[in-house]
Amino acid sequence: MLPAANEMQLAATATIQTNFPEAHFWLVRRGSAERCGEPVRKFNTEHIGIRVEQTDLLLPDYLFYALSHVHQTGHWKQLATGILSLVNIRVSDVRGIELSPRATVRRGPKGPPISRKHNGVGSMKIEIPLPTIEKQQAYVFEAANDAAIRHLKANLKAPKLPGQKELNEEQYSHAHLLREDEGWDAPPEDVVGAYFRHFQDAFPEYNTDAKMAGLLGVSSDRRIREYKQGRCKVPYGVWRRFLVLTGRVPQDIIPVMAFMA
Image (cartoon, rainbow, N blue to C red; front, top):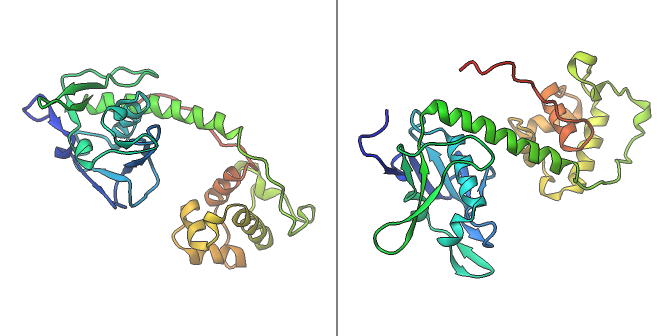
Protein backbone atom coordinates (compact mmCIF):
# COMPACT_ATOMS: atom_id res chain seq x y z
CA MET A 1 0.00 0.00 0.00
CA LEU A 2 1.05 3.57 -0.59
CA PRO A 3 2.10 5.58 2.44
CA ALA A 4 -0.28 8.14 3.88
CA ALA A 5 1.88 11.02 2.75
CA ASN A 6 1.47 12.19 -0.83
CA GLU A 7 5.21 12.15 -1.44
CA MET A 8 8.21 10.40 0.04
CA GLN A 9 11.92 10.24 -0.65
CA LEU A 10 13.54 7.36 -2.48
CA ALA A 11 15.60 6.60 0.63
CA ALA A 12 12.38 5.43 2.32
CA THR A 13 12.04 2.55 -0.15
CA ALA A 14 15.63 1.73 -1.13
CA THR A 15 19.16 1.34 0.20
CA ILE A 16 21.47 3.77 -1.61
CA GLN A 17 25.25 3.83 -1.20
CA THR A 18 28.58 3.46 -2.98
CA ASN A 19 30.65 0.25 -3.02
CA PHE A 20 27.42 -1.75 -3.07
CA PRO A 21 27.72 -4.97 -5.14
CA GLU A 22 24.35 -6.24 -3.87
CA ALA A 23 22.47 -3.35 -5.51
CA HIS A 24 19.86 -3.92 -8.21
CA PHE A 25 21.66 -1.36 -10.40
CA TRP A 26 24.03 1.60 -10.14
CA LEU A 27 24.28 5.26 -11.15
CA VAL A 28 27.52 6.67 -12.53
CA ARG A 29 28.64 8.97 -9.72
CA ARG A 30 31.63 10.67 -11.32
CA GLY A 31 32.46 11.38 -14.96
CA SER A 32 31.63 13.69 -17.80
CA ALA A 33 28.44 15.73 -17.67
CA GLU A 34 26.99 13.36 -20.27
CA ARG A 35 27.72 10.18 -18.24
CA CYS A 36 27.09 11.41 -14.72
CA GLY A 37 23.87 9.95 -13.31
CA GLU A 38 23.55 7.28 -16.01
CA PRO A 39 21.97 4.03 -14.71
CA VAL A 40 24.09 0.93 -15.46
CA ARG A 41 23.81 -2.78 -14.71
CA LYS A 42 27.53 -3.33 -14.11
CA PHE A 43 29.01 -2.92 -10.63
CA ASN A 44 31.73 -0.39 -9.92
CA THR A 45 32.85 0.54 -6.42
CA GLU A 46 32.61 4.25 -7.28
CA HIS A 47 29.07 4.06 -8.65
CA ILE A 48 26.03 4.75 -6.47
CA GLY A 49 24.23 1.47 -5.89
CA ILE A 50 20.46 1.30 -5.46
CA ARG A 51 18.65 -1.69 -4.00
CA VAL A 52 14.87 -1.41 -3.71
CA GLU A 53 13.73 -2.86 -0.38
CA GLN A 54 9.99 -2.29 -0.76
CA THR A 55 9.41 -4.16 -4.01
CA ASP A 56 5.67 -4.38 -3.32
CA LEU A 57 5.64 -0.61 -3.76
CA LEU A 58 8.41 0.08 -6.28
CA LEU A 59 9.74 -2.26 -8.97
CA PRO A 60 13.54 -2.09 -9.44
CA ASP A 61 13.16 -2.15 -13.24
CA TYR A 62 10.64 0.70 -13.15
CA LEU A 63 13.07 2.77 -11.09
CA PHE A 64 15.92 1.88 -13.47
CA TYR A 65 14.04 3.10 -16.54
CA ALA A 66 12.62 6.15 -14.73
CA LEU A 67 16.18 7.14 -13.75
CA SER A 68 17.31 6.44 -17.31
CA HIS A 69 14.78 9.06 -18.38
CA VAL A 70 16.07 11.41 -15.69
CA HIS A 71 19.55 11.05 -17.14
CA GLN A 72 18.52 11.30 -20.80
CA THR A 73 16.57 14.49 -20.22
CA GLY A 74 19.54 16.18 -18.56
CA HIS A 75 18.10 16.55 -15.06
CA TRP A 76 21.36 15.53 -13.36
CA LYS A 77 23.24 18.32 -15.11
CA GLN A 78 21.40 20.75 -12.84
CA LEU A 79 22.65 18.97 -9.72
CA ALA A 80 26.13 17.76 -10.72
CA THR A 81 29.11 19.58 -9.20
CA GLY A 82 32.74 19.86 -10.29
CA ILE A 83 34.74 21.16 -13.22
CA LEU A 84 33.39 20.97 -16.77
CA SER A 85 35.34 17.84 -17.75
CA LEU A 86 34.70 15.91 -14.53
CA VAL A 87 31.55 16.30 -12.47
CA ASN A 88 29.84 14.20 -9.83
CA ILE A 89 26.51 13.66 -8.14
CA ARG A 90 26.08 13.00 -4.43
CA VAL A 91 24.52 10.03 -2.70
CA SER A 92 22.32 12.51 -0.85
CA ASP A 93 20.98 13.79 -4.18
CA VAL A 94 19.81 10.29 -5.08
CA ARG A 95 18.39 9.59 -1.63
CA GLY A 96 16.47 12.83 -1.83
CA ILE A 97 14.64 11.97 -5.07
CA GLU A 98 10.94 12.36 -4.37
CA LEU A 99 8.38 9.69 -5.33
CA SER A 100 4.93 11.08 -6.01
CA PRO A 101 1.90 8.75 -6.00
CA ARG A 102 -0.18 11.70 -7.19
CA ALA A 103 1.61 11.92 -10.54
CA THR A 104 0.43 9.77 -13.43
CA VAL A 105 2.83 7.80 -15.58
CA ARG A 106 2.32 7.73 -19.34
CA ARG A 107 3.50 5.02 -21.67
CA GLY A 108 5.59 5.98 -24.63
CA PRO A 109 9.15 6.84 -25.66
CA LYS A 110 9.10 10.12 -23.72
CA GLY A 111 9.04 8.26 -20.42
CA PRO A 112 7.39 9.24 -17.13
CA PRO A 113 6.73 12.92 -16.36
CA ILE A 114 9.88 13.62 -14.37
CA SER A 115 10.03 17.08 -12.85
CA ARG A 116 12.49 19.30 -10.98
CA LYS A 117 11.43 21.56 -8.18
CA HIS A 118 13.01 23.78 -5.53
CA ASN A 119 13.23 22.20 -2.11
CA GLY A 120 12.74 25.50 -0.30
CA VAL A 121 16.42 26.31 0.27
CA GLY A 122 17.35 27.21 -3.27
CA SER A 123 18.48 23.86 -4.66
CA MET A 124 16.74 21.50 -7.06
CA LYS A 125 15.20 18.12 -6.35
CA ILE A 126 14.02 15.48 -8.77
CA GLU A 127 10.49 14.11 -8.57
CA ILE A 128 9.31 10.96 -10.34
CA PRO A 129 5.82 9.44 -10.31
CA LEU A 130 5.00 6.38 -8.24
CA PRO A 131 2.05 4.66 -9.95
CA THR A 132 0.52 1.29 -9.10
CA ILE A 133 2.57 -1.86 -9.64
CA GLU A 134 0.40 -2.73 -12.64
CA LYS A 135 1.19 0.60 -14.30
CA GLN A 136 4.86 0.22 -13.41
CA GLN A 137 4.89 -3.18 -15.14
CA ALA A 138 3.30 -1.68 -18.25
CA TYR A 139 5.88 1.10 -18.36
CA VAL A 140 8.77 -1.34 -17.82
CA PHE A 141 7.56 -3.52 -20.69
CA GLU A 142 7.49 -0.64 -23.16
CA ALA A 143 10.74 0.93 -21.94
CA ALA A 144 12.55 -2.43 -22.04
CA ASN A 145 11.35 -3.04 -25.60
CA ASP A 146 12.54 0.40 -26.69
CA ALA A 147 15.93 -0.28 -25.09
CA ALA A 148 16.14 -3.71 -26.75
CA ILE A 149 15.47 -2.18 -30.18
CA ARG A 150 18.25 0.34 -29.63
CA HIS A 151 20.64 -2.42 -28.58
CA LEU A 152 19.77 -4.59 -31.58
CA LYS A 153 20.47 -1.69 -33.93
CA ALA A 154 23.72 -0.92 -32.12
CA ASN A 155 24.77 -4.57 -32.49
CA LEU A 156 24.92 -4.09 -36.25
CA LYS A 157 27.72 -1.55 -35.70
CA ALA A 158 29.92 -3.86 -33.61
CA PRO A 159 33.54 -4.06 -34.85
CA LYS A 160 34.49 -6.79 -37.32
CA LEU A 161 37.47 -8.85 -36.10
CA PRO A 162 39.47 -11.62 -37.82
CA GLY A 163 38.27 -15.14 -37.08
CA GLN A 164 40.18 -17.65 -34.95
CA LYS A 165 43.11 -19.44 -36.60
CA GLU A 166 43.77 -22.10 -33.98
CA LEU A 167 41.85 -24.85 -35.75
CA ASN A 168 40.20 -25.61 -39.07
CA GLU A 169 36.48 -25.45 -38.35
CA GLU A 170 35.65 -27.30 -41.57
CA GLN A 171 36.91 -30.44 -39.86
CA TYR A 172 34.23 -30.16 -37.16
CA SER A 173 30.46 -30.36 -37.18
CA HIS A 174 28.57 -27.08 -37.34
CA ALA A 175 25.70 -28.48 -35.26
CA HIS A 176 26.75 -26.30 -32.31
CA LEU A 177 25.68 -23.25 -34.35
CA LEU A 178 22.09 -24.49 -34.68
CA ARG A 179 19.12 -23.91 -32.40
CA GLU A 180 17.96 -26.67 -30.09
CA ASP A 181 14.99 -27.55 -32.28
CA GLU A 182 17.21 -27.59 -35.38
CA GLY A 183 19.48 -30.40 -34.19
CA TRP A 184 21.89 -28.55 -31.92
CA ASP A 185 24.75 -30.53 -30.42
CA ALA A 186 27.23 -29.36 -27.79
CA PRO A 187 30.52 -28.13 -29.26
CA PRO A 188 33.60 -30.34 -28.93
CA GLU A 189 36.26 -29.25 -26.45
CA ASP A 190 38.64 -28.17 -29.24
CA VAL A 191 36.10 -25.69 -30.57
CA VAL A 192 35.23 -24.42 -27.08
CA GLY A 193 38.88 -23.84 -26.22
CA ALA A 194 39.69 -22.18 -29.54
CA TYR A 195 36.67 -19.89 -29.42
CA PHE A 196 37.25 -18.89 -25.80
CA ARG A 197 40.96 -18.20 -26.23
CA HIS A 198 40.31 -16.19 -29.39
CA PHE A 199 37.72 -14.10 -27.55
CA GLN A 200 40.02 -13.55 -24.55
CA ASP A 201 42.86 -12.43 -26.82
CA ALA A 202 40.55 -9.88 -28.43
CA PHE A 203 39.08 -8.70 -25.12
CA PRO A 204 41.77 -8.69 -22.40
CA GLU A 205 39.21 -7.57 -19.80
CA TYR A 206 37.96 -11.19 -19.94
CA ASN A 207 41.37 -12.85 -19.95
CA THR A 208 40.68 -15.12 -16.98
CA ASP A 209 38.28 -18.03 -16.58
CA ALA A 210 36.64 -16.24 -13.64
CA LYS A 211 35.85 -13.23 -15.81
CA MET A 212 34.52 -15.48 -18.56
CA ALA A 213 32.30 -17.19 -16.00
CA GLY A 214 30.85 -13.84 -14.97
CA LEU A 215 30.23 -12.82 -18.58
CA LEU A 216 28.42 -16.06 -19.41
CA GLY A 217 26.52 -16.39 -16.14
CA VAL A 218 28.37 -19.56 -15.14
CA SER A 219 28.74 -20.52 -11.48
CA SER A 220 32.56 -20.64 -11.32
CA ASP A 221 35.82 -20.44 -13.24
CA ARG A 222 36.24 -24.18 -12.65
CA ARG A 223 33.22 -24.82 -14.84
CA ILE A 224 34.78 -22.79 -17.67
CA ARG A 225 37.93 -24.91 -17.43
CA GLU A 226 35.80 -28.07 -17.53
CA TYR A 227 34.14 -26.84 -20.72
CA LYS A 228 37.52 -26.24 -22.36
CA GLN A 229 38.90 -29.59 -21.19
CA GLY A 230 35.86 -31.54 -22.36
CA ARG A 231 35.11 -32.78 -18.84
CA CYS A 232 31.68 -31.13 -19.01
CA LYS A 233 29.45 -30.31 -21.99
CA VAL A 234 28.56 -26.65 -22.46
CA PRO A 235 24.80 -26.18 -21.90
CA TYR A 236 22.81 -24.82 -24.82
CA GLY A 237 21.90 -21.54 -23.08
CA VAL A 238 25.50 -20.76 -22.12
CA TRP A 239 26.86 -21.57 -25.57
CA ARG A 240 24.10 -19.68 -27.36
CA ARG A 241 24.85 -16.61 -25.25
CA PHE A 242 28.51 -16.81 -26.21
CA LEU A 243 27.65 -17.21 -29.91
CA VAL A 244 25.39 -14.15 -29.76
CA LEU A 245 28.09 -12.12 -27.96
CA THR A 246 30.58 -13.00 -30.68
CA GLY A 247 28.24 -12.30 -33.60
CA ARG A 248 28.06 -15.90 -34.80
CA VAL A 249 24.28 -16.22 -34.44
CA PRO A 250 21.41 -13.71 -34.13
CA GLN A 251 19.45 -13.09 -30.98
CA ASP A 252 16.11 -14.88 -30.73
CA ILE A 253 13.07 -12.68 -30.06
CA ILE A 254 10.25 -14.39 -28.17
CA PRO A 255 6.79 -13.17 -29.27
CA VAL A 256 4.34 -12.00 -26.63
CA MET A 257 1.02 -13.78 -27.10
CA ALA A 258 -0.98 -11.77 -24.53
CA PHE A 259 -0.67 -9.59 -21.42
CA MET A 260 -2.05 -11.95 -18.79
CA ALA A 261 -0.88 -10.43 -15.49
